[in-house]
Length: 149
Image (cartoon, rainbow, N blue to C red; front, side, top):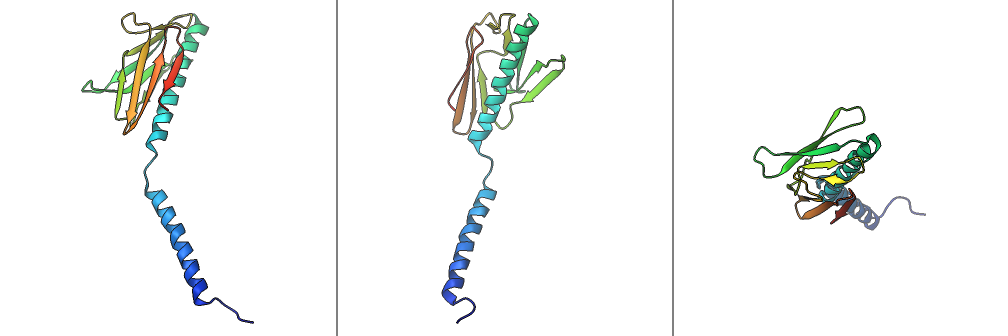
């Protein structure tokens, strides 16, 4: 009975290990998935809009989420709103190439109806990162729809 490995078995093991190490190296070097980043930002914004609308209905008063522009006013970099304890919540729209919106104020009345900047009754917010784009639409009744993910 032979003991040990022959040369062909050693070469096969080294080849398999090289493939596994190559896959691990490539996956570690690749950056974060841009689509996943966009999905996370869109989902967070959508949940915050729904939160503000819900607070307006529950408290029977107007609640607002406000977009904050970049210093050059070419895009939006963050937004603010109040939480349950009237603390200001600031969320950054980081890692995005561009954020375009038809409204800077997203207000909801006591019935949950949307009110924009200048008596707008709907709003569209488009967020993009590299080749990925998502659009958030808010209609006059305050319903939120996401397109593009």
